[in-house]
Amino acid sequence: MKFISIVVPVFNEQDNIDNFYQEICKYMEPLAYPFELLFVDDGSRDATPAILDRLTQQDSRVRALILARNFGHQVALTCGLDHAHGDAVITMDGDMQHPPEMLPLLLEKWQQGFEVVQTIRLTTEGVSRFKRMTSALFYKLINAMSNVHISEGGSDFRLLDKKVVESFRRFKERARFIRGIIGAIGYKQTYVEFVAPRRFAGKSKFSLKKMLHFALDGITAYSKMPLRFAFYIGLLLGLISFGLTANVLYTKIFTNEAVPGWATIAASISFLGGLQLVGLGVIGEYVGRIFEEVKQRPLYLIREELKNSRTENGKTGE
Image (tube, rainbow, N blue to C red):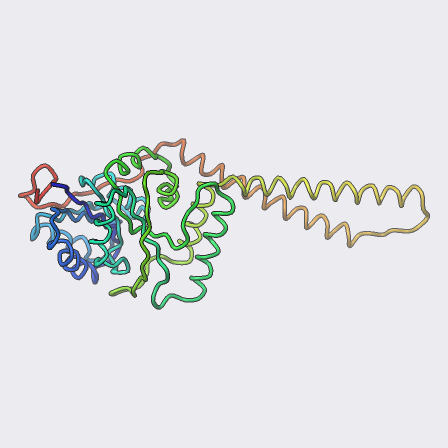
């Protein structure tokens, strides 16, 4: 019988976990699939690890990996995919914004032969207009600059067949942008739309700073366009500067006009200097990513694995 893994990265979600667990059981137990619920605690500082320990002792279908520190959502998700045992793996967040009631639909699509079932978030209840606008702008930018298409509204709520998970594990880059990896990985994919409800409890851990880092990781991981853009801007300004130099020489040699020009020169130097610094910053961003990759440090470190003592072979319920 097919076995299902549900991978859930969590960070300071003590107020959500019990309700999330109950909802998962509510929608998975009536189905014919045995399943495991694999939580990945990303360095929580609240009671999340203690709650996970209790759940693992109460239910042998629950496992939890406690990371040594906070490595970030994408790395925690990768850790869960690395340790999932299922014939299909469903990844979702534990704050109830990825509705558990959609699990039967994802599995139905999988049964129809789809190897990747990707959910598309149409909107999120209560989200600000600024976040909606910046999210839409990000997807437009990355799709314009990259040859890998990433669906607007794509989330980390998806089902992956075991063969897709095995292929995913071969991707070793440190700057993880899993939506891009899944978009580039191929296989037979389909999409399911949903409206994300409000968080059940607590506040989102995805701050503006994290959003910007996430966007930058996505753009630099799948596009060289910023480097090319800096080159083209430099080439264009070089041509303009050449024209201005020719004009100054002509005025100096062939006319008697006094051309002080100090304001123009000062403005030009400031403008060109600023653009040079921007170009160096773009190059530095890519060099920094190369530096991180060549160190070959572990992507994550697991401090502890929590599971029921009755669990055998990592596949309970089979």
